[in-house]
Length: 308
Image 1 (tube, helix red, strand yellow):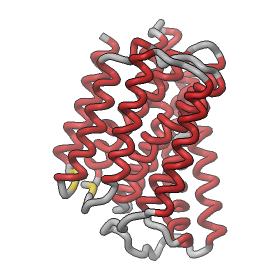
Image 2 (cartoon, one colour; image 1 turned 180 degrees about the horizontal axis):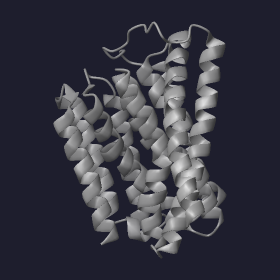
Image 3 (cartoon, helix red, strand yellow; image 1 turned 90 degrees about the horizontal axis):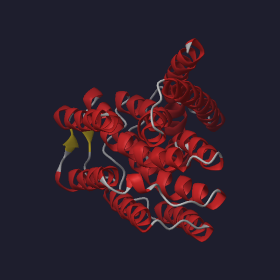
Image 4 (cartoon, helix red, strand yellow; image 1 turned 30 degrees about the horizontal axis):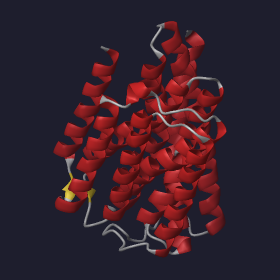
């Protein structure tokens, strides 16, 4: 048990350090490439911080634990929208200014697609390949249609001026994030096994939160630096990647249906959170601390329900 606790604590430290380095590098990359921080959050940071989910879900599927694999995907997306976005807003209100609407529509659409797969219990290699194809289409479309830059797009005096330094910070931050996420998940799974927590619950909560901590670290670091586009893009982008990229890779490598246990309340909550985020982006000017507190409270209530 001591080893599991030390792994968990070490993972948390790694995530905090890696998140700051990754955000610094990502903002520098955005400046060098001439793309918005929203696009960087959606594509670059969203992809990078989804790697712990990829590793955990694929390994779980190959190990014959589809409940952990798909529970991790569903639980991570719930954590992204409710916990991570909510915590980021509690730290620093996130200005919206019309950004991210199209991506939130995509996130809701792929969430409904995942729910359909859970209800029909279809699992096949061709479905996984199709999901992987969709993420490629999304990235190409997003690059060709970047949209308007958020209002927080300003030059930062403390950002790296060298492209090499920016990519170096990003790479080092990503490596620390993945190592920290893996350490935390390993420790958390060990603790859950000791206390005999069901597999689906492990995937939905401990593994999901553990693999989502890179997104939390990156989004909180972005919020502290006033980069609302990066914080929002990281969350929405990660949600899309989790379903299309990670779900696609999981089903391609180890084809199995989405766990039937997820087709009810958890998928309903995930869909409702995706729809709520879309509504906020269309009708709200910012995600303030009150809304952030509501989101975090909803996540906490779901965790209590899952363990009850």
